Image (cartoon, rainbow, N blue to C red; front, side, top):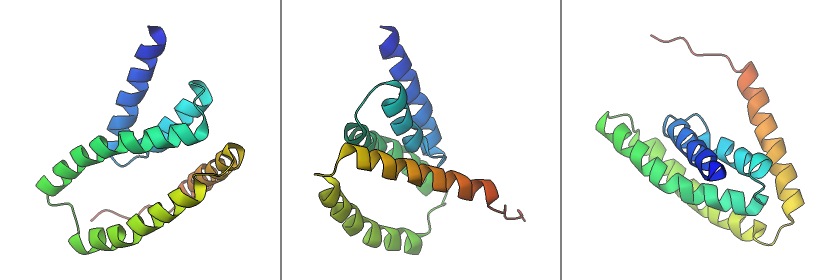
Length: 123
C-alpha cells in the first residue's frame, strides 16, 4: 500500500510540475527508473501516456489566458510529430542500456545548460 501511495504522490507532483512546464515528465521517468525499478523503455512509454492528460489540462489553461502563439505552436507540431514517430520507430528495438545512457546524457546536458543560461530581464 505504501508503494502505491508513493507512486500516487510522485505522479501528482510530476503532473503539477509538468503543467507548469518545469519538466515533470523527466522527473517521472527518473523516479520510475531509479526508485520504482521500472525498465527504461517502459518508463518512457508510461511517461508519454501520463503526458497526454496533463498537457491537455495545461493547454486549456494556456488557451484561456491567451498564452499560445499559434505560429510557433503550428511549427512545433509540424516538426515534432514526424520526428517523434521516426525516433519511436528507430528506438522500438533499441537496447535498454543504450536508451538509459542516451537519456542520462540528455538530462545531464539540459541540466548543465539550465545552470549557465542567462535569465531574460522582465519588463
